[in-house]
Image (cartoon, rainbow, N blue to C red; front, side, top):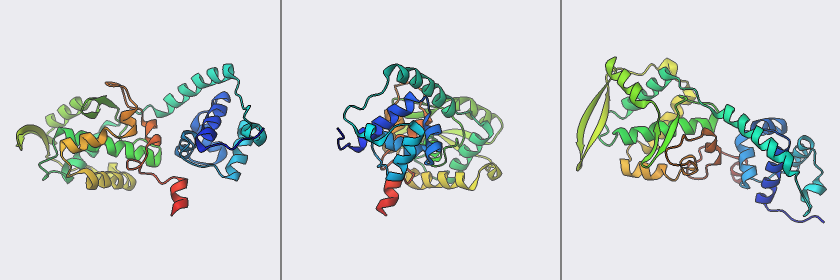
Length: 267
């Protein structure tokens, strides 16, 4: 017997079928001609599936619509378990970032130049501006901006190996570390002594960074830290663990920076 399904039930069944086929989200999304973030939203139950998309899913995942809608719908658990492990490995390979040191240095310099006169931009705010630039760009373009890896610490996401990069930049004379008093606290700040090499930044990269600075560049360390704690990638990660970029596709308002199909339909 067929039953009416909620979006969450539909998404869950599509995810089960995908895993049973041993497909990654990227592979299935390409096969049905939608973006990987859109598929992620479907599997979460946050996005509806139209008739044409259902037909594409049924052909790729090899199911009949009657079976799919049936209350007796089942997936072979043994197959699903093996496929899920394979899919996890595929997704891990896709999302592993490679740090582009020169790009990271220029992004950091670009942010420091834009925020040089802002007394609120100490280390804590700087870390968050870097984080949101990297993760917003990945959500929008499914490509890494700097390739920096971020770790979840109690006060928010922090880029790894930043201390090494900062030391190199101080030694080469492109930034200076200073201590300043901001209200009743002593904060560490960085002053740019050189300009960013803008030839290393694409227009799309500059645009994402500019939007992050415009939105959060005047926030205090307390405000931006609290805001970062509400972001899905940070929330879904264990303390002291590396934050997976793929989690950016599970963001919801106000953190999501990408327009998904249901948003377009509402316009």
